[in-house]
Length: 338
Length: 284
Image (cartoon, rainbow over all chains, first blue to last red; front, side):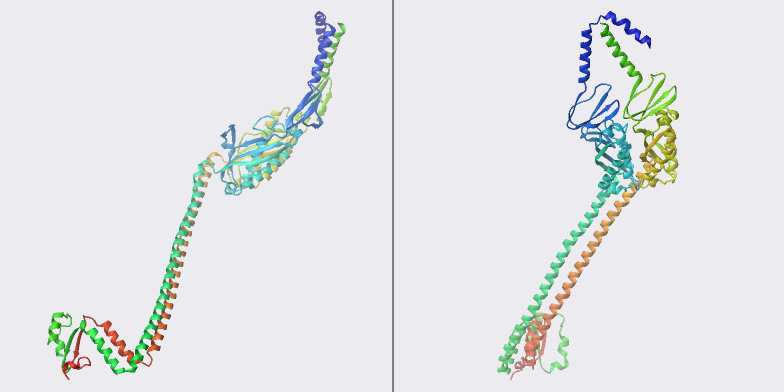
């Protein structure tokens, strides 16, 4: 140690320092050193001051502040409103573009199927002191995608997906799964006392792995086919039943018409008969003869007639001679004249 | 001039000397102070501390905050002889810096030791469970158990293991292919089921429709026949009422009417002359 004191001793006299200059320079340096302790905290930030490595409370809020400079005190200024983002199963490489991470996104479900899930976790600093000093590889302030939050997110995601069946996670259970992951992740971060709070856990893409996606899509189209077949059958039903009902109505109306016609005609016939009979009764014989003769007059001209002597009817000899199967008008006329 | 140099020298000496005998411990550090290799004190509280200069008293710094242990993926067998690729991590911290310094010295060596501890505990515990338990229900309780066992072993090195956690538990690639095949088969079966269900429903609806249509038609026929019957019966009654008491005249007039309808040009009439109509042909 004495040697170290020797070294400046031999140097200084040759410099010929003016005391005023020395004090002036020292004063300026000291002033600058003192002034270097001024710092500002923005509206969304908080500052933590360590004096000789030890935390001094309270935490400094937004505004202009001062701390002892240099080795005495150090200040850490961090945003506490900024929302940080952790990506599982993919990485955003540039806005709108992302790289897949299949080893992160493919995982086993509770029913031992494999599902492809991408997740985004959004979180904030809740307790700046804890976030700064409790966990070395937190990931938040290191601008690193690997770290505690990423590890815990992956663990929580897989654990929760492992508790649910693939269909549940793919469809109606998605919200539940999301909520469970959020709770689990928060629980883990609390266990590590990381001073972080999870704002949101969002399952970005949940789908069957590419290798089996076609089969899953076919299930969806099979469901549609089922609907389609059923709808077609309903179409057939909607076509046929009204027609049958129409036909039935037509048949019933027809029957009604028949009934009315039948009865009305019968009444008409009856009235006519009664009217005729009433007149007939006034002179039965004459009327009967008249009707008979008139009728004969009407019907006989159209017929083939064979009028024979009364005694010939007994033997029937003449009838045997007639060709009754092929009656012909000329023959008939001929016999008529006989 | 002398005093100016003196001030400079004085400042230099103070700063150098202070640096030699003082040290700071931050919030994330802890320090073991040794004197010729012998432990003097262990400092876990942050702040400014003093000691004898270096060759006499030495400080060794250790992390106080939570540290990471991220293992390479391991292949493990479950009780049902299935292989899982397990990627796990642990979070740990040094709780007894002096013990840690004696047994492991550095974080690098600690990580190697942690790897041995965690791996053996995981293999042991997972060998007792079936794959489905590891993946699904039991993961939490398995991990609690493994964490507790690792922790109690690690404490002999001055380490606390806060959490051992499985990040990923996946099937090896060759088994994945089998799972995909099974998934595909399951979905195909499901799709077939839906289509057959559709056919079934469609056939049922069509058959129901045919039945309903037949019922509607038959019921209509039944009703219409009844109505027609009523018409016929009523007509019969009206006729009967009209003709009762005039049977002979009815027979006479109706028969003649019927002649008009029934007899046409194809009718051959063979009549003896002594009928009423022809009797005058014989002469008076």
